[in-house]
Image (cartoon, rainbow, N blue to C red; front, side, top):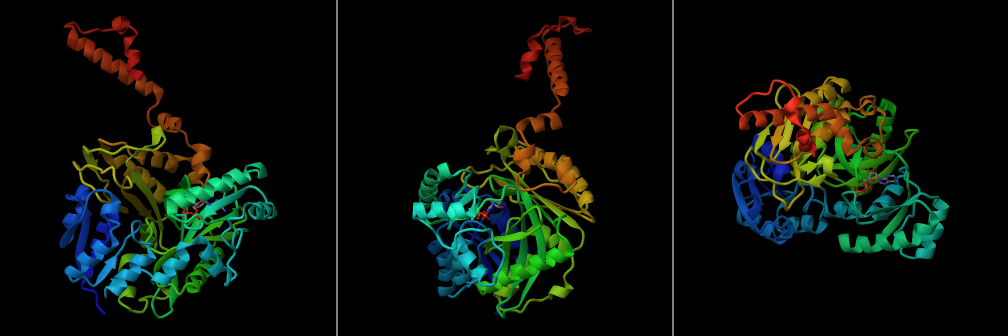
Length: 496
Ligand code: ADP
């Protein structure tokens, strides 16, 4: 069937990004929005828009039944869930299908299996995919869990089966801490995910996170679109991603790609999906989990392959066979993405919501900005504070990094603090430039002082404070001081 009208059950940059591809394909679009997003760009970009309710996600973007009813009223053929919100909710996918529409994503059964980390490990185990040593099942019996932890060897990681977004994980360094951490992990998992089941995994001290983009059709054919390097993480959440990874050989890429396709086959997957691995110092890889949706970081794969992943998702959802083969895919150039959050990197990345008084995107060759805001708009407090994603593309990694630094310098944002200065710190760091980093990069190298020395040398601050003081003194007295002799020491207070 040909899809003629899509409702995008999401907001912000990803909603806009999906609308753009739909428009290129001649497909009509319906946006949904909350009261807080009335004037949002995705609402303006779509052909039609429906208000779902108040700002809180639980009263708007998470209202599965309401979204489905509105879609039916507007004679929508298919629903694209984007990422986050309802995108990995098997029940929602099922209801969309039961209402006679297409869910642009995998089957509810695939979502169900891969949404549970224990079930996902079990499915992958059938294909002998390498896995971090751990329990094969969820575990609640504390003495038994303790025995298993000893067998695996400390440090270990307790993970929530239903976990996601870097939440629901606890590192246990020593046996003495095991019981208390286990109890905490179970109660946290219960309150965060409504499911207290946890399992145990060996904790690798400083791995890389490398994931494979896969794409399958409804006829059992698969391809992989190479890897994304996502090791620059904060609290187990990705902040900078790139493709390809500078440590992966052609042979390793082939092995990881084949393993990823097997994981997809293990749950009869179709549509775009991501198989995540952690990779140790020897470059041995271990299956972590599969994400059954479009990822935030999908643009880097699009840039190095020349494929539009949203378009492929739509074609697969229509029942079409894959439009290209593995052999026709090749990596061209290098792409890097930085996530631009309204957060203050000099203050523990606290959200910094407010009005974008100045907002000027970088331009020029090899730059893509996927964002959801314009100058003058407010960043709502109710959602993830992602302003957008800045992606650069160039012939090789060093050039892509150089281009990213240029783009960050060109990006002008005032009114809120952003993570751009932090991203520039990473781009300029020798370990990042040399490709020598792992998931501990930020912990190892970054502190708020890193920004001060990089961007606001103390001497500059001193000079600026002195300048302001002289200017004000000049304004309040008619004489112009020609030396700093009469300046006094008060100007130093401006540094505080
Ligand atoms: P989530 O679903 O919450 O994103 P993941 O299982 O994908 O959880 O893991 C998120 C991140 O946590 C990984 O990218 C990695 O940095 C870290 N991590 C997960 N498992 C391990 C492990 N066994 N050892 C070390 N780090 C891990």
